[in-house]
Image 1 (cartoon, rainbow, N blue to C red):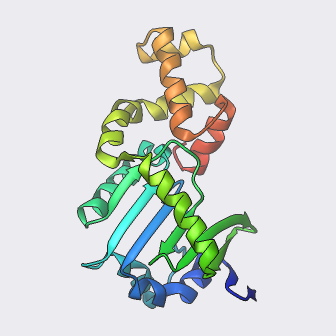
Image 2: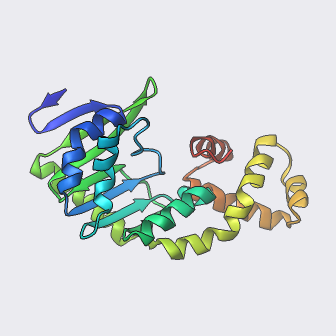
Image 3: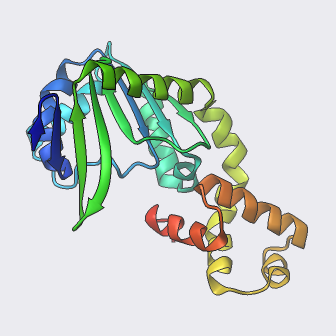
Length: 217
């Protein structure tokens, strides 16, 4: 569906079919996401994958902003490190983000909700809207933390996260959970609080839901 300078598309494959040429021509790409799954094409054809990967080519400025939960998965953390080595500037923010890609400050791609296993996306070229989205991204970028710094802060928590999540799911007492990890109760509760913060969860139940969404459990 298209209305003037806004196009609504369903699913990653249609999104990248419609925008691969924009990625291929872009000189600046910025991206904000909660995890590595939002912008992943599930069944991309080779030409689509080529367009998606094009923004990693030499000479393109790439900035990516993620929530801390992405670093709790060792494979995701490794993937981010590889992207950074390829030249992308990556930062982490504990704040909520609008999952967005902005190309050359001219086109904004906004992620919508999942429905029937497919996510909807809005492709916006209206200058006033793109400028507003860009301003929100820049504000979040300025208050974010470099990937290496945040990754070092989460290193110990990442090693504990799977077991802590298992213990939370079991519904046992904190004293029992702490003892099984060889931690004091206060230290265990601090780790749980840190894990909840990294996952952007306000309760232990929500932390479990978010962990499942990220594939951590």
